[in-house]
Image 1 (cartoon, rainbow, N blue to C red):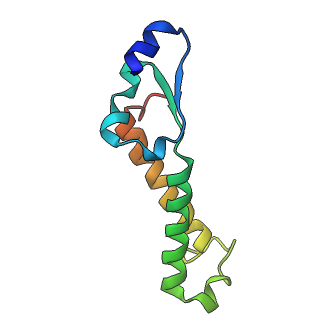
Image 2 (image 1 turned 90 degrees about the vertical axis):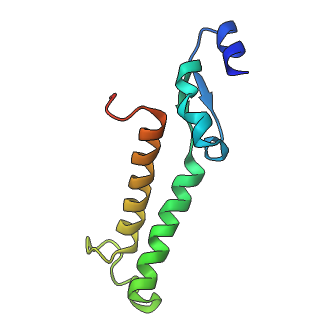
Length: 100
C-alpha cells in the first residue's frame, strides 16, 4: 500500500499510531517515503514503567522525596531514562540513528 501511495504523492509520509505497527514493518518504511513515525504511546508507557520501577525500589512513601532532586532514585529521572532508551531503540530500528 505504501508503495502505491508514494507513487501518487510527492510529500513525505507519516505513520500515525506507529506504536501499534510492527518493528519489521516500520524498519522498511523509509524505503517507501515514510519520513516520520509517531510513537507517543510507547514513550508514555516506558516513562511510566521507569517511574513505577523507581517507586518500587525506594517505596511509595519515600519516592516523592526524590522528585526533582537529580538523585538517581528520582522517579522522574528513571522515567526519562526508560523513555530515552526506547527512543534510541526506535531510531536504530527505523534506520535514523546517526542521521541528524
